[in-house]
Length: 188
Ligand code: PRP
Image (cartoon, rainbow, N blue to C red; front, side):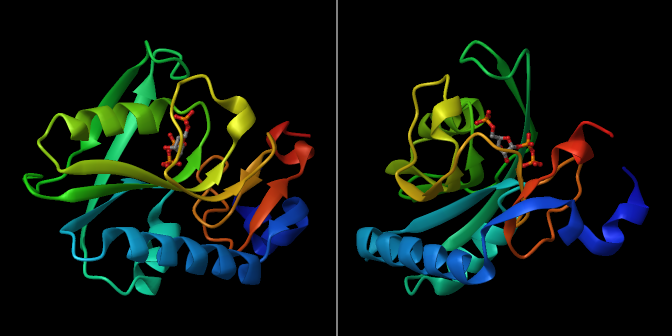
């Protein structure tokens, strides 16, 4: 593992799960669902960094309704996989949520811990509503009781990277979603 491996990221992939075309279809479908549900509402789209940045950028550009944008950065600790863990807010939003319908954007719902904590935090701030939109849902990994209101695709419990999703901060810039070869993350 090292920067030399970035010369050709494709060779580090076991397979491609979602091509650029697949992703475009997913994004278009989800954007249409959001447009339908939020027509006439004061919508604030909140991206949770870093993983959501590419999905969010594509999604909001396919939406026809007006919206405002914000970003948060958080990190989980204390096992991070149960509802009793802790979430540290590294960057908060600055908008007063009164009167807003908030849509949280995440790249992936895994244990569900991060989304559930962030959602809970924003719900305490007087928003009209707080809903969740995720690009990928690793349903079988869920340990916290939370579901996405808008889900791009359900994926198996594989090491997925690309389109914002990383391994050791790399591969986020892949335009597709791939499954990382075992030898990469097992260091062989
Ligand atoms: C990833 C992802 C979600 C979270 C999902 O973030 O972006 O925020 O993990 O896992 P959970 O459902 O088990 O909480 P990560 O902490 O890797 O940061 P990143 O977005 O900067 O990659």
